[in-house]
Image (cartoon, rainbow, N blue to C red):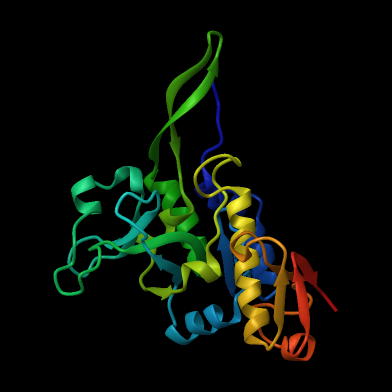
Length: 260
């Protein structure tokens, strides 16, 4: 019998069986920030997102970016039925005609809010999710290469995803962020056309370069600027703030790291 992990949605049952829900409640934790994609630009525990989440008084929240093109391999947020809950439809489960459908009022894709797996939940809500997923046996069918006595073979596995929590939420808030500031995924090995470690590294360098210039700094470079940049230590700045004292009037030669 071939066995495999149950997907990142197995997190909820793991939190329940390990009694971590009770442990967090004992320590006074009310909100949980989570991300489930290798993302070099993720802002862990973003105070702006947390404040928005608390202000809205919702059970679940998600950062979203606008979908780049119809066939982009990202899930999208949809509302199931009139007045129904917000939920995520994975790209592999979305009909191509719906993926390309245009909203005639806005001119944008009808389903344009990409799920980039940057979520926030209340602790009480996640307790309910763990019980609901266990009771309802929610699974997604995924085609995978599975080892067998005859070598690698194509098979199917049942997975749960982190976003399976959203249909259980009585209220959900979406928070749009800029892709170039918060989404640099790593999904493929270097040498692929997109979403590689190298492409993510460049996105970090470009963002931090913009921070330095906005703070009054200057850059010199011996290679094209699109292929290089600077990296700002997280000990100096979380999201580009408080850099004036370090950068104003100074010249940095890219590539370099800016620290204290």
